[in-house]
Length: 233
Image 1 (cartoon, rainbow, N blue to C red):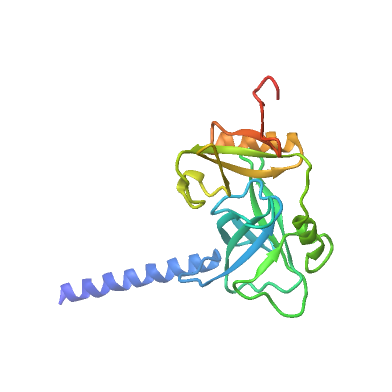
Image 2: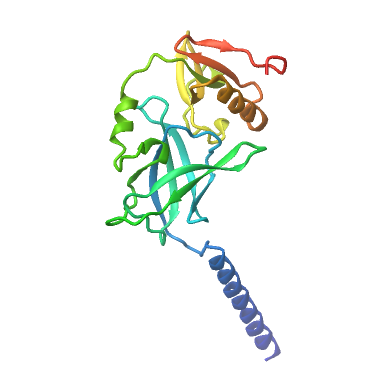
């Protein structure tokens, strides 16, 4: 009988712990078995973002970035895949913006700005960032500009060179979105799309400190190496 009572007491204790753990997780917005919705965001600038970066809605963390990759057709535009709690409803007309969360480490997050609109985005829909919208609800003006070739000089960061082609999801990239270009039999991997040398230097310094100690800047379309050692900075 004593053994039975002890067994029941042990099971009761475990049940109480499970209930407490569930309540704590729920209060932190991370309930057990929480269903996630998937959204895609087009970003002309993904500086500081990485796979696993936080997504905030109304100032509260509501999800994470599950992947980052360059758009196959729009030069320099990054597609971010978001996994957001299913109890978060995003009205049509809402926009997304990049927000800095750690200046020292150069880390950013995404902030979804909710606005009143007719209906809600469904899981699988694509959102546009505030920078891309350019004041138009459908972002068409920005899309047209992106589809127009430009001869202006831009700067990108080369993070890796390899004799073999690697997938964007390869752990060696640490979730940083990259673009692969083959030159003379060598695959080179670039990230970023900067209009100024100063922006590129800041991004390069952040990437060197976090993931890629040998990262350097290349200018396009001339494919020139920009030397930015401590003396030139």
